[in-house]
Image 1 (tube, rainbow, N blue to C red):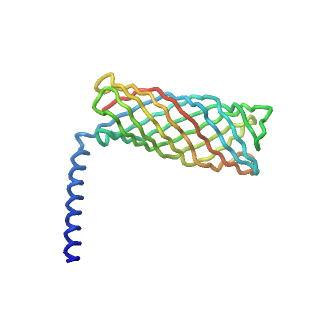
Image 2 (cartoon, one colour):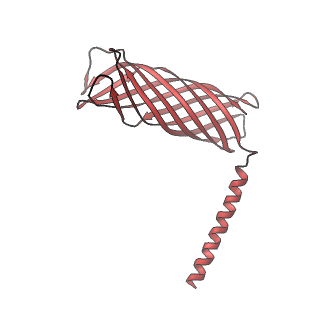
Image 3 (cartoon, rainbow, N blue to C red):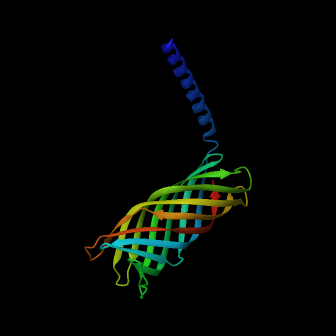
Amino acid sequence: MKVMGAIFSFVALAMCAHASAQSLTYVVSPAMVQGYAKVSLNTTFQLDLDEGEACLASMTGVDAGWGISAAAGLQLLPDVDGELELAIYSGTIDYRTVAGVPTLSIPKEKVRLVAAFSNVYYKFQPDTNARFKLGGGLGFGEYRLTDTTGRNHRGTGLVYQVKSVAEYDFGARTTFHAEVGYLGTTDIDVDVVGSTIARESSLSGITFGLGGKVKF
């Protein structure tokens, strides 16, 4: 009896999985998949840089900087979008503390992050002209700091972001969007040109963006 019960349970589970697969295949049909491309002009707020070098911890604030991002995506489900995004953020150092002590001289060092993300968004009220999206992404980025001597401090590592997006359709194919997000990196091992000192850096902060999207 136990064997028969296990067989019936397996058959029922297989039928449910088959039905779910059929339903999913129907929802994600080629006719319902819609592509889009978008561009956004961005700025950063409260962008912080944490560094460790020669056993000393450094905390650095970065002035609000400008950036740009471009993405291409697909509407995978009526309320789910998936996209690939390339973003660039840059700024200059505003203040720095080393081992908890503020530095008197603030170097005008430039910081830049170039990152590629794979994002997923969930759309609230997808069938209306105005909607809200919540999502995020994981990717890979290059961090670079150019100091006052012209030396490049460069490293690559994992990056991540969480975003909330407000969209409004101006037509069947054109959409305006405003977004706010949290951007961060894992600890990145940085190679300093002309130095043997190992530096570990991480960057995190809040971003704002305004842009447009074209559906096709």
